[in-house]
Image (tube, rainbow, N blue to C red; front, side):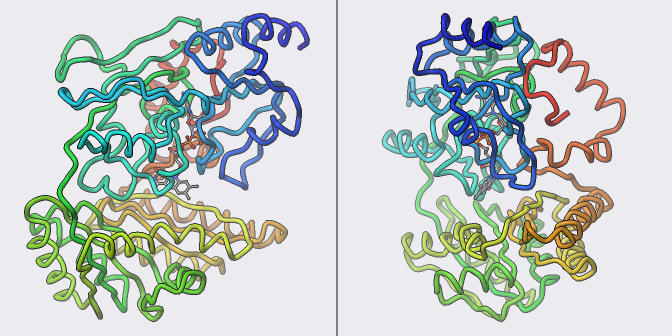
Length: 455
Ligand SMILES: Cc1cc2nc3c(=O)[nH]c(=O)nc-3n(C[C@H](O)[C@H](O)[C@H](O)COP(=O)(O)OP(=O)(O)OC[C@H]3O[C@@H](n4cnc5c(N)ncnc54)[C@H](O)[C@@H]3O)c2cc1C
């Protein structure tokens, strides 16, 4: 190990390396707090692609596994250290290298925080849509590696839909440049797509080119409260069948509403079974939000609230963003799910989640990107109560099975990490799984990158 560290010291600036155990421990765990993390041998914090190449070459020559890390906000243990690994944290690579307003593209280093990117391109009248609820803390590199979704992805699509090119350091230390610099290209296979959502198991992303869209006109926002879950589910399906295109369609259940209200006093209806937070944008925003609220009324919404100006709309969205911090105030540990079904199966999923909560006697609050059919039931667990943790884990597995039985997915936007690795074969058939592992072996034959994660 000392030869390994000596080689790293020869190849990298001194301040890029840390072996202090308290410091390495602070970079060894993401936000999946029930997933275990090992003890890293070293933390490397590169500033340039050349630094990354040096780190990869030295690790490869000593057979030391590399765990890439963005901002560590992941929810599946995908950035957790394994024993003796190198944590390669990209958080210092924060340059926005080019904003190209003519072609509506931006080129960034991976450590740029999503919110900083949004603000930088907004100054040019442009919009980068993917907006995970963690947008003010998660990195673009992490968003790419998890194919992050978010609140406005129901209209604008997920991270994958915006990545047009990547620079990736491969296990060989070579630099691979994928994708295009023009608005269109059909040359060769889509290697960019292969790396999006690959959870750091194929290579280290060191540069990202993203597509942008013009800043949309001010949005219209509404909230609809329902006394039961099923009518909310059917209203959501009808909104899309009727041809509407909301830019946000979020659901917050009663347990979440009550906790947000208890902590932040936002005058929410705590007796409602759930609320739908709806936003529309574009020229037709106001006409469209009215039509959508009419659909909600026809499905039995108990009350409706239409924001009169954008700042009021932002306040309503804030209720959604505050669910997680409010749940954290319960002083327990949160274990979030991330399942999705087709929109017409949403009611069955919502009701099934409630039934599972009762059956396993667990505390559960559900939020979700309802327009995408993507639900995040969040288990609230006392980590010091093994029986409660066991019940929560069993309920967690039951929700995955429910999603699969409804033709859905076990991982809509958070990825697999270690949290769901044992379940991946329940969704991917053997041929697909074997093909994916073949690609991993072709690119990383010695298993250098993020071993034990995702695949
Ligand atoms: C409060 C809260 C709300 C959230 N809301 C959402 C949401 O709405 N939608 C959503 O999709 N997610 C959400 N998440 C999850 C998380 O924020 C996302 O998964 C995010 O994309 C992770 O980014 P990160 O920079 O923190 O990456 P990390 O957690 O550091 O890493 C995530 C994965 O990416 C890999 N990785 C990171 N950088 C690189 C790189 N440069 N090259 C190769 N691999 C790399 C890591 O190895 C790991 O596998 C939320 C999390 C929290 C805590």
